[in-house]
Amino acid sequence: MAPIRAWVITEGHAGIEVQAVALAEALGLKPRVMRVAAPFLWGWMPATVWPAPILFARLQGAGLKPPWPDILITCGRRSAALALAIRRKSRKDGAMGTFAIHILNPQVESRGLDVVVTPRHDLDNLRQHRHGGPNVLPTLGSLHPLDPVCLAEEANKLRDRFAGLPRPLVVVLVGGHSQNYQMGAQCMETLGACLRRLHESSGCGFAVMTSRRTGAENIAVLAGALAGTGAYFWDGEGDNPYRGVLGLADALVVTYDSVNMITEAAATGKPVYVATFEANSDRIESFNKDMRSAGHTRIFEGEIDFSWAPQPLLETPRVAAEIMARYAAARSPG
Image (cartoon, rainbow, N blue to C red; front, side, top):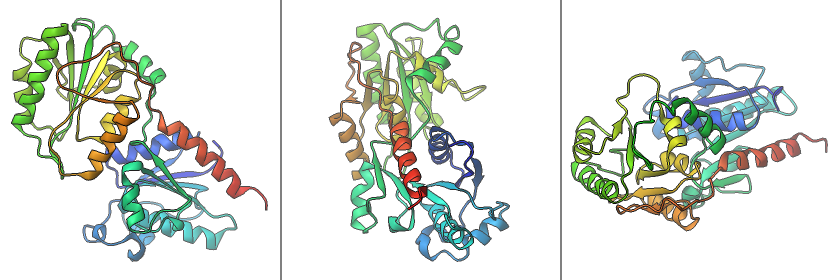
C-alpha cells in the first residue's frame, strides 16, 4: 500500500496521534501528519454541524487542498469533522474519493465514514447514539506500534544501562489525575505498600515510569514508599526509555486509569498486573473487566506470578489487515 497517498490528522495530543500513525505504518503507508486543534466552542458541537472545517484548518496552516488523499486517518472526536468534510469534498472532485478511517468514537453516524475503529468499551455509547454499523471495527484497548520483536530490540539498547537493577525486573507504569480519577497520595501509599511487599517476598527490582498526569507530590510519595529497594525513577530528562524498559521487564504493574498504558503493557507477552483504584467511569471499568476476561491482565495486590505467560495483545496488525481487505474491496471494479 506504500504508493497510496495518505494523510493523518489529529489535534496533536500524543496519545491520540500515536494511534493514527501506528495504524498508518501497519498499513504500510508513509502518511503526511497534520495537527489541527479545534476552537474551544467547536469542540462541544457535533462534528456534523461544524462550519467550514476545511477552511478553518487552512487558516491554521494545514494545507488541506487537492489532490485529496487516497486514505485519511483521523483520531479523536474533534478531528471527525475534517474526516467527514474531506470525504465529501473528495467525492465531488474525483470518482473514487478518499477512504476515511476514524479511530475512537466520532460521536457521529458511522455511515459518513468508511471505517470506524473504536474500543470495545465504547460500543454501547456508539449504539446508544445510533452511530454503530457494519463499518465499525471494535478493538480490545487502543492501537499502538509495539510488539515483542520491536520491544526486544529496544531492550538490547538499554541492557547495560539497567544491568544493576535487581531481577526479576518489575516495570511500574503510573498514570494520574483525570476526569474520572483522583489519584492522590493515598493511592500512591497503597501502591507503594503493595510494591514493597512484592520486593520483600521476591527480591525484585523496579523501574518506575510516571506520566505528566502523575504530579510531583505523587511521585515523591511513591519514591518514599520504595526507598531502599533500589527503584529506578525516570526523571523526564534525556531520551525516554519507555519502550526499552517494557522490553526488559519480567512483569509489569500498571495503574487502572490508562487504557493506552495497559494495552501497551499487554503487547509485551509478560505478566501484566493492574493496580486498581476507585473510579467514576463505567468505560474504564468495562475495559479492565474485558482485559481480565481475555486473560491479558490480573489485579495487583502485592503478588506476581512470574511464570505466567499471557499471549501478547496485538490489535493494530489485526485491524490493519481488515482495513486492507475493505479498502481493496472498495476500490475493486464492480
